[in-house]
Each structure stands twice: as C-alpha cells, then as structure tokens.
Length: 191
View: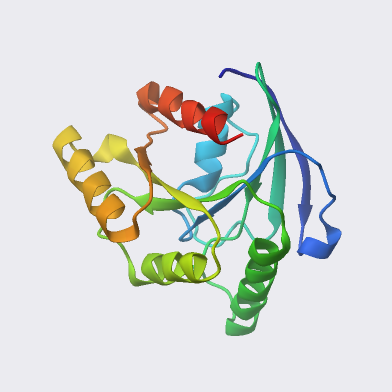
C-alpha cells in the first residue's frame, strides 16, 4: 500500500459534530505527547498536516484526516491524549466523556494505542487497554520514538507489550522511516 495524498477534514469537540464518512476509520489513542500527530505527518510525508507540539495536551479536539492510497482510502482520527496535560480537571473530564462516546459509538476498523518506547508502560496505558478490552473494541499498538532506543530494546518492548496486552505491536520512528512499510501493510490487511 502506498499513500497518494492526505488531507485534513475537520476538528470537532465531540462525536455529534463528526460527519459520517463511510470510509474505514482508525482512532489514534495515547498519552499526551506520545507522538500521534507526528505519526500522521510522517506516515503521510507532510510535516504540517497534523499540528504537533512539545506541550502535552495540545490536541483538544477530534481531528479527522482522509488518507488516499493506491488501494483504498481510509480515515485517521487523532483523539485528545490521556494522562498529563495542563488543563483543568473539568476539561479533562469533558475530554474523557467525548473520547468514550467516540470509541463506543463510532464505527471503527480498529483503535491504535501509542506507547512511548523510552518509558515503561504507564498505568493510564494499562487502564485504557483494559477499558478497550472490556468494551470489545479492537486495538493494535504502535511503539513510538524508536529512534531513541536500541534495536534490542525495541524488540524487548514489543515482546512486553504483546505479552501484556495481547495485541499486535509495531515499531515506529519519525526520524528513521524504515518502519512505515510495516504499518501500511497492517492498514492494508485490516481494510
């Protein structure tokens, strides 16, 4: 599978305002600042398609992107990160409610949970994974920021995540693009 083009569709505060696109859709989940937006930009080879920031909590809306490939188009939904962000407790609760509603009611091919290769699996990653399994929501994992750790460490982390979560897990690096083909092959397999 090769990406031919990618475009931003819209940002929405909640599911109610998201259009039905009638395309296979993947929802991107992960802690704040784990690299979801960078993943979109790298995968689509467009540096400014999705807004990125070093400040946790910058993605506050549901951001939809249409990806056109040589096989079949699909949608990536970049969702607000969970975990640390400098926002009020009330705003975090609103994010959580909107996230749950989106994941429970939106027709998704799969969710993609992002884990930072530089750190151990965090408690909120485990809680998210348990919630997905409880609600029978399909998921695979992307191990981000793999350019910061050794190949040996990447292999260990992937084995740990697959054992703990029971999900297919792929490595990814925005600097070293050798992992892109594996990610695209999985998208192609799932759609």
